[in-house]
Every structure is written in structure tokens, then in C-alpha cells.
Length: 268
Image 1: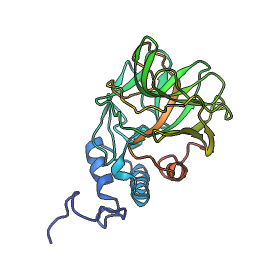
Image 2 (image 1 turned 90 degrees about the vertical axis):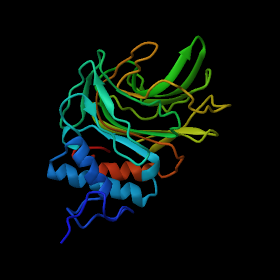
Image 3 (image 1 turned 90 degrees about the horizontal axis):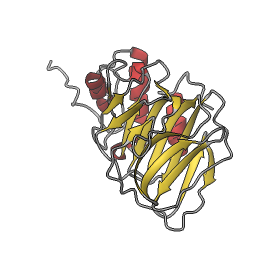
């Protein structure tokens, strides 16, 4: 009987008969070096679920729990049909069982692409600091003109999702995420309206009379704003994803992550 290749099989949201894993998930295991059996099942189930939502080809994500990625070294491997956008751990963030640990000093992960078509950002993280910090972002700053986006944790309040043109930005301040627990935040824009959802609670942005397109040429970063001032975050980040497709299914993605790759984090 001929052997089965990792690239051969069903790739439409159903698991492969070989190994019990989705084909794209299985290929990611080879690339990233994932060996943990539980992590493999969690990742495969997540991929299957994202495909069932019709979002996989428009998504790239970075699973940052040590068993779900390389877990050692300075490369954070990406997963998703949008393309390959591996990140580089810079200035010493460390791998951990719950995610990559950023010490709030100068740590961040930098990818090799601006990813400036993003319309949705997803982040699972546990904040430990009380000052303004950038969870992830991509923007240019030149005087009073800013373009791009940031997902910030602003003091003792909730995360803020900012989509920049000049002074336009928006935020949700009704969810307190400075409590030492993991939370799941999403920032969404469709070039007409923007909003943020934290743990399933959605708020509307303000000051968005001319919502921007994400035209920054700087590369996407996780854990700090390494351009025009570092502003690092003191936090553990377990997962980051972006999509170049505006979708109203963001709460479905949150629930899917919580029950697959986010198992054990205590997400609300």
C-alpha cells in the first residue's frame, strides 16, 4: 500500500484519516516541530473549526503556547491559509506553557510582513502591568499623522483597538482586563465602522468619521510597539491571529479557541 503524504487528503475542514489530524495542521507540526499529542489535537481541532467557519484561507495565526509552537529558540511559526509569516522573538521574550512571556522591558516578536490588509485582530493574553502597552500593531507615525492599527492595554482599563488615519481611533472601556486573568480581545474594522469585543462583550468605537484602511508599511509586531517608541507589554500572550476578511463570526472564533488551543487558560 502506498504511503500517505501530509499533503494528501481531505483539506476542507474534515480531519484526515491518517493520524487523525487535518492536513494543514499536520504540515504545521512538521514545520514548527510540535510533538505533544494533546497540543496536536488542539491545533487540528482549531484548524478544522476555522475551516468550518469558512475563514481559514483568510487567516494567519501564531499559537504561542510552548507545546503549540517551537517552544524553544527565536522563531514563532505561523499557521493559516493567508500565508507564511513566521515571527522572530526579539530581546528575549521566553516560551512558557501558557504563552510567550513578555517582561515589559523591551521584548517583542516581529514578523516579516506588514500584514496591512488585516480587518480583524484576535489576541489571547494575560496582562500584568498597569501602564499603556501595545499587544500588537502595525503603524507609521509622522508628526500628527498615523496609519495602521494597535491593540493596546491601557492601564487598569480594558484593551483598546485603534485604527489610525490621522487622529481617528476608538476604544472600549467597559471590561477590566487588568486582573491577572487571561482574556480574549478582538478588534474589527470593515472600512466603514469599527468595534472591539472582549470576552464576548462588544463596544462601539468613537471618533471614526473616516475609518482608515490599514496602509502601514511597517512589519506586524506582537508584544510591543517597536516603532516610534517601544511601549512594551508586561504580559503573557498565548495566541494572536489576523484575518483579511471582515467577518461577524468573531465570537465563534473566540469560543472555538477557548475550547481547543485555549483549553486550560481559564478564559471567560
